[in-house]
Length: 246
Length: 94
Image 1 (cartoon, helix red, strand yellow):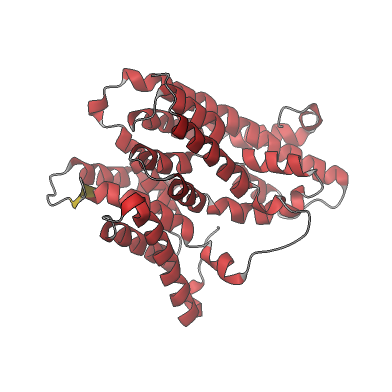
Image 2 (spheres, rainbow over the protein chains, first blue to last red):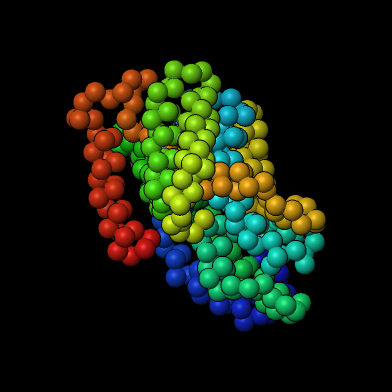
């Protein structure tokens, strides 16, 4: 997708490469850690590599691995991963007018390779969709420049992490590093009072409902947190203000 | 080390489809459309709830019980992680 010459011949492609290059170290560190954590949480090297190449979504991978290892049913794992990934649904609604000139499979491939930071950089660079085919092609080139750096940096670091993981003693407890990383992501999402409440309700409900079979406590926790927040928002609409970003 | 459990493989492929569906959610249909209002508002709260539901029991529970001692290394790890993370996030906008 991003290796197509039609993107590379625009200057915007290389601008995207430079912009995303400024955060490549952080992306690589997160990928390395994800690679190590997947193996240390109980996946085999082959499984961790397949997950890296197929799933390409760090938070969802780190959230899914402990559930897979503990034998949770498929639909519960998928529902939880879907919820972790819901921010991308918001991003795709925003990006729709920028991409609708492309055929469907190209739109889906573009979406698949667009991670959090590529979206953030793109949305900052282009507040409005292009008005002409040339403008749209340049915007797409910028997005693909970002995605290329994100993809290569993430994949390389993840593979290194998966391979290195066997050289690291299990006693160091690095499987837990994945949980700590997710805790960091969680804090970065806590941008309003109701979101903090959502995290609190979900955490408490997940602990209280721990005894449920099939890891259903995760789904109970998500549903109750979202319901509580929607009810409070409905009763007191001004509390829903103050969101930063998506 | 190189063994692949068939069930795990199926889970991984399905998780890949989840990535495609969520990242391309509004690219699938050619017709313009949008989610109902309650679902759009729910999107604000579901991701953080999903992360909290996975993360918090892993930190405060061991073998199906609440951790009953502050000596547990995981609590310190979480606090230490936050002590490093929060200044970076607030100060540098990471």
